[in-house]
Image (cartoon, rainbow, N blue to C red):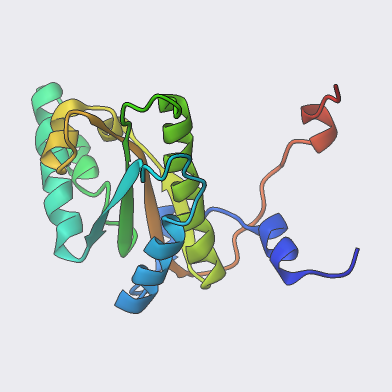
Length: 189
């Protein structure tokens, strides 16, 4: 097989911890491109079963305050340090994009397939950011599953978080981690 830079990129893509991200993050035009690519995923029935929430600048801090308030309410014995850690949940990277999964009733497209489409949107955002030279990481966290925290972040009762994609500058090339052997994952019918 001839060399292919896209295949080489995909074979070597690596997530980077948000605390290791540096710089200002993508420009508005780059964010638009990343979101456009995020929306270009398999979508049976053309339902667009996802939407995006962009947390950038002070919005990351406001979201962190909301997360910390819910955490303190649920954990009244939490220390100031524990609450402050939650406050910083979305502020380590310069940009965080939440992918919100919206499952719609449809006679031919089951909820599971719609949720997978939202997951594909997450992966496309990660891949697009990495292809632009940024560090990216797809995370959730307890607040992705807490209805009070979700409401504080603008997520409706019928919606779920598929992931928070943290995007920032790459301080150094990340080391790879051990990967499973493909032969251990594959069976042939």
